[in-house]
Image 1 (tube, helix red, strand yellow):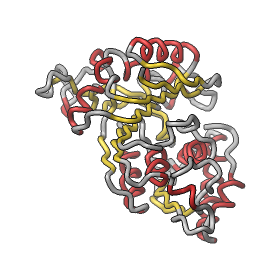
Image 2 (spheres, rainbow, N blue to C red):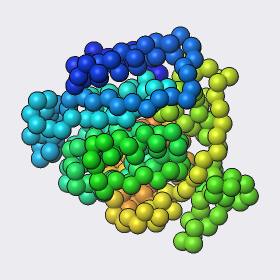
Image 3 (cartoon, rainbow, N blue to C red):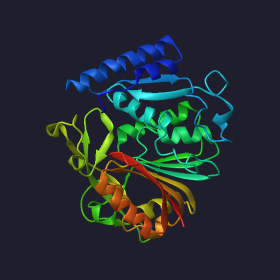
Length: 318
């Protein structure tokens, strides 16, 4: 987690005294985590209600462009878990305030019909896109059960429909080592010539937004290597995912998979050509160059590349 989180911003959005108290609790828990103190496990579920962040960065024609705080636009409900909430709010601010994954024209959902969200976490990117364009179909994919258990009630609390959540990690065939939930044996064929099974991820306590095939590959100073824990989760290739959910042409693919982005895209050129636009968060310079090479090989043109340490690459199909 970053050393600083803008709680003043969140308090300005809080709807009630109860929501301010929720934020105070999360701020205290976050300070404890940064001091490497442990929080009680398992966490408790709670709801945080926020005013809409406003219409300042909503594209013309979006639902949110007609409103803002106090304008009749519905409030936002986040279903949080106390032990995961400090990291969850990092992601909320990145997406709703800072424009992560949607900062470039054409990637905010305008004119789109279908979006695939890989690395959905608690669902804040899906929530952001659906609030702007309620008619979007979103297929969200998330490998960690604790995040899925937050994603689904958050979608329900905000009355969002036409959203499906697949509990799996999307990766390349070479990474898949198991056969379904059994977690042993060889990968299985789905009947469509596409492979799926299980994959080993590394996870970190209290940070549900970080799950990677190799956490150490993208150094984070707040991570204690002794606390990293392996976990086997369901895995599926990108072609198998598209077949499973029954989508053909997809307008936007968002990929934020904590350093596994090359694995997701490699060997999936035919599937990638079914997307019009792709935005990928790249974890480090080497990953960014590899992602750009894969996308260009698959017929995409980069339209914007963020130069920061963990930044987005935006690309459109030729």
